[in-house]
Length: 247
Image (cartoon, rainbow, N blue to C red; front, side, top):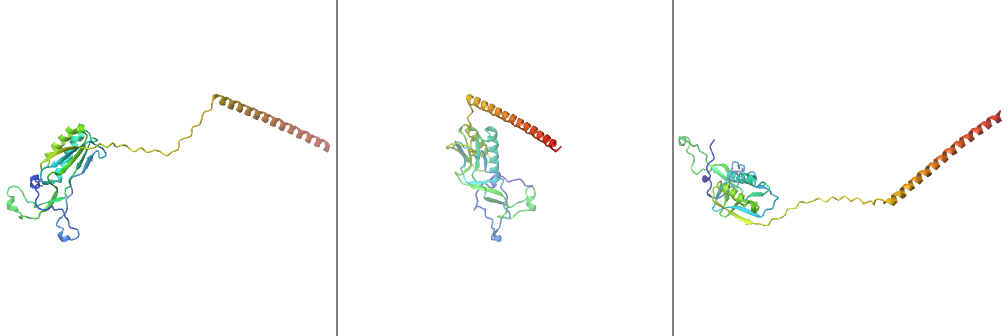
């Protein structure tokens, strides 16, 4: 397996950008297959947070940055800031995208390789990766954080600069910090109507009324019982008289 060639082989801008893959006219579809980008995420950190400082990593020359270098920069910054200040105190954004397709005429390397293969001069080559073409004074990466974490952010960008094939510098700017308030859902249920508690005098009156009602109920109950007993005795007397008359 051939190792990855150094960045100096692809950092210079030569010729127009090679980005087009013909779909309608297949004869002009010279790209055998576009390789996938190695950049996993372009935005990372506290995406909903608001911060008062913005740090930009800006290039100072024209050049090409491969996708593996951009991914290395992103992981370096994210690991350092995540361990130093926490993932809720920063936001990272990659400002460039690798559109340019890199081509290479692969050859054997090592002792005696020139006897096996000498290769074709100025060949078209096969696709091996992607790269982003940048111009001078163009921002590559932006980090948003607070003023108290300025030292940690600058240290992270200093470590990231060594992983790029082009020279760069760091610029800081201030911005307004917007307060993010959480939306509170208000329930639409009706509040219960408060019921007034009875006073001491009203409670006494209610008790006396309940006693009177129970007394009247008892009286009516006893009267009904006596009436039923009298009716039963009268019916027995009438039956006895009827039996005597028959005899």
